[in-house]
Image (cartoon, rainbow, N blue to C red; front, side, top):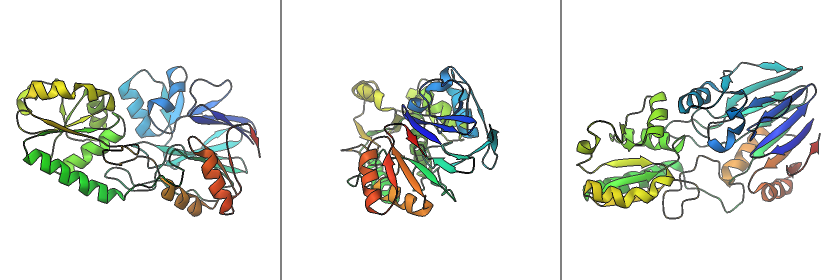
Amino acid sequence: MLIRPLGNGVLLDVGGARVAVDAPGPVHGATHFVTHAHTDHIGAAKSTQVITSPGSHEILKTVGGYSSTYIREGEVLTVGGTEISLIPAGHIPGSVQVVVDNGVRAVVTGDFKMERDVIEAGADIPEDVDVLILETTFGAPHHRFPERLVTYESMRRWIRANLDASNHVVLYGYAVGKSQELTAFLNSMGITPFVPFRTHQVNALLGLSDVLIGSEGWRERATEPSVFVLPPNFSKIVSALELELGRKVASRSCSGWAKNGFRLSSHADFVQTIRYVDAVEPKAVITYGRNAHRLATVLRGMGYDAQPLDRLILL
């Protein structure tokens, strides 16, 4: 088995199969898989067909411009004698891990998290893993998030306090993934947020309740203190929103990177990542992405055969 880095993804040469996971573009002779529908993982789908989960397939079809098909959980695709299947990753709706088995069983996690949120149940734990190819965005020891239920309660109190003070509220989150969690959370509070078109499209796939900004009557509905769920690149319009709607706007970012917002990440933090590896009990670990070297060092200190994927690896 040959494993090599591929942008934000991984390329595996396994027997008679080439398996490209989250490739930035087409790879000659490869069968392409996409773990989830974030734009930095779906580059290949712009010019070649990718295989993904039913949920990610629907998102890619809805946002448009991408070519995909899908296999369901429990189904196995055989390519050149290699069996490939998908299991939940818990990152965002539709996210999956890719399981590749030709006698040596490898798992590419893609972006994942262990913690349950209002939509996702958290990553499945694969069994009998020889090689774990582990994504490590928050894999350094200083990345430790508060428990999600604690963060949800902080958000709930902050939102209610601002609405009671007659402020509009803006929560920033990516249009695909985080905005659906935020919308579902607000729906659980009895709040229907105002959202832009891309968020509205994906929310509709999940049956979430929102008001489309720009739809008929939306300004009239926003005369009362309201909550908006916006992508981070909309931050420049907040001052205009205050002027147009005549209310102060209180805003917070919702991200693992947030410094003055809510640390609500769709990724596993360091503690979750270690817990995941311990649950999987792989024979070897290949780390990739941000913090790959730091986490490989930590895992070696714990007794794992671990190395970062920054070059071609032969197993």
